Image 1 (cartoon, rainbow, N blue to C red):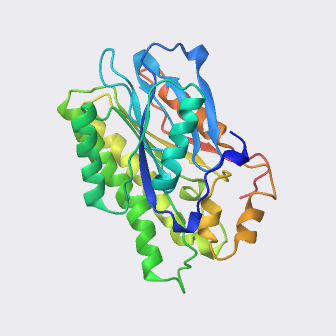
Image 2: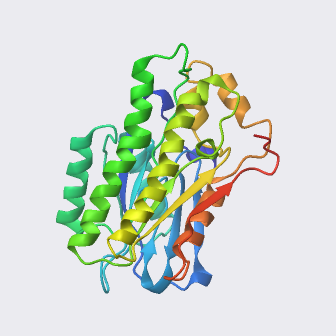
Amino acid sequence: PGEEATPSCDIGDCSPGALLVLVERPGTPSSELSVRSHPICWGMVRVLGWEGLGAGLGAALAVSPLTQDSLSFLFYSGWVCAACHGPKLAAECQSAGYPGTLIPYKCDLSNEEEILSMFSAIKTLHQGVDVCINNAGLARPEPLLSGKTEGWRTMIDVNVMAVSICTREAYQSMKERNIDDGHIININSMNGHSVVPQSVVHFYSATKYAVTALTEGLRQELREARTHIRATCISPGLVETGFAFKLHDNDPERAAATYESIRCLKAEDMANAVIYVLSAPPHVQIGDIQMRPTEQIS
């Protein structure tokens, strides 16, 4: 949809949220994959991965087909307000003719109890999780020398703890159902591979370095567990989302300028990266995709 279809919402008032989405049945050939972008929520992808492994990308946590003929569903997460964006996005999907049903599920990913309740609901309604895409992330302008502890803690809770908790719960869900071909994808950042000379993102960069380490540690633990579940990082540079508006919530002009200086990555670029990862043959594990706008310097 165009900009006029963007739900009205103050990004600054949003909290890390989650949306549960039902998508199409297994069977769609890869040649028919299509991407649908959303101005704030990134995109939704109609995708069937390798050997019937279906998944979808919103801005987030995704879950593939359960078993046999069941519907595939994804878990949508990120800096969106589920209450105001969910119903609107669900209506857009229905009017656009997307198969399945999008079910808004609000979850504060900085709250472990809500995360556990969310996974419990998924288990009750849909048996469990086969593919988990950890996408929720945020940055607060809190330098190391003068930043507020509250801002640091918020970044740790969402960027590190939520990723770890969702990863653990997703793996346990796969394990108890003998899912041996699942996938856990962490949406990381180029800030998790290099520290840029901008004090407002130094602590954020530390949390993303943690995601880099967590993903490799996860890969090693999965090998020790003798499972074929795979772990992957996708590390983008500048992506045109609401991220900068949260970072610079007191300076919207500066936030807008972030996306005006160069041609940024788009929702479709991230969605295609996820499709690529999920479409890899079972014997291929993609460790990390580092991608940035061609014009980006740092």
